[in-house]
Image 1 (cartoon, rainbow, N blue to C red):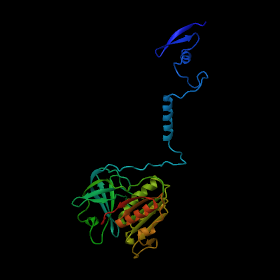
Image 2: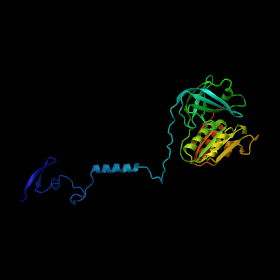
Image 3: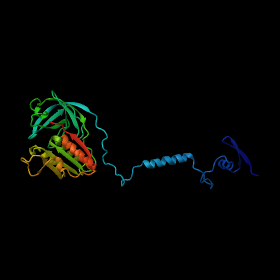
Image 4: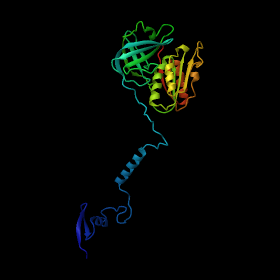
Length: 314
């Protein structure tokens, strides 16, 4: 007869034969349930903890990104919110004509204001009401980091902020600036970029177009600019630069036929808008009628549209 000894498992006494392991003794006495693969014994339901781990493992698998063939990630995440509004002060340091009814104003700030291409700012020239303007670059592409370059229209009726330049507003005139404001700023990414500018709406469109050529040089760009008078198509040096960098689809439009060069097409700007695709990204800047018409066309095609409304008289 083999020798035996006593073993206490979970508060109960278990008889153990000499040579048996404590685990074998506990199994033989029914103290614990058998598990799969243990000494060739039968299978049993998996422990709850194992189930829980298995469940968590499946959750991790579901959270993994899809293969690139199904959904390619965006090369540049789109901004989800605008930058914080800041205030700056400065003075007018340059006033120069651009076209028949357009003038350029440069404000030099005491400290740089962080802006994205296409952002707007609220500008208050001392003694005048605040106006929402679109900072841009000079038509040759130059601008200092602490400069804000504006393009203002001279209305034929003598109204508007532009007519105060050289009279109520001159060099060294104090200026207060608050910004950025607006949602029309440039968002790097894919998809054809369709840019439309009416009159001084070229200001934000020029900064967006130039940024796109540096940030996304392979991106397809279509640009259309329009003015009521062909002599107000002051942006030709900027258009030449864009052509030199590979932008082949550039259209100039004028409502009036007087002194209209052959390369300038007649009719409203929207009449020359190409067929939009759902993958297009549209930026339009100008008067309310132009911006509204483009927004409707973009919505009908499913294209994303970012409008910049230019205030009357600006």
